Image 1 (cartoon, one colour):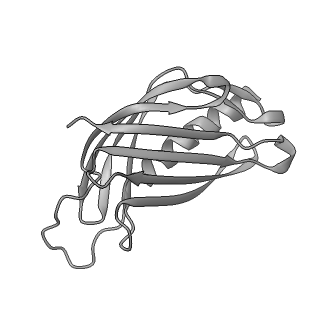
Image 2: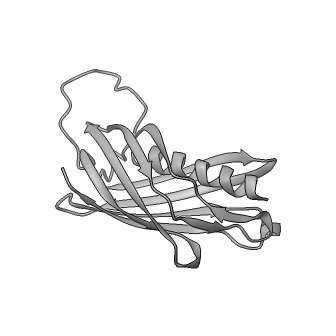
Length: 161
């Protein structure tokens, strides 16, 4: 059970990083202007049982391309119901992705993972403020119905550089 939760946590970190990033290269390279996700964002993410952990993003955003590092601190607990519960280990992930061409201030992403034989879907939404200084995100881990519940992680990050 604990392996499932730890695997879920690493999957969540990876999806969070992917959601706030980009991977497709432009078809016609041209000088790309800096986007709203450029910079360093720091804040907290909140899990189950009132737990929280520090989260830091160091992102480069050119055109619709975003890449960077995600640093998660200790303290986040997730409860996957019958599928297990546990604390998410601190860690670092590198991620790349892209923003939406229709609404570059909003990110939506979905990702599927297999954790210890359990299919897991992660749905993430992120919204950056008009001034680009605040990033609000929410991630829902869609577990199989037999688990009994879907953990939700929310966070608020602030641009520091």
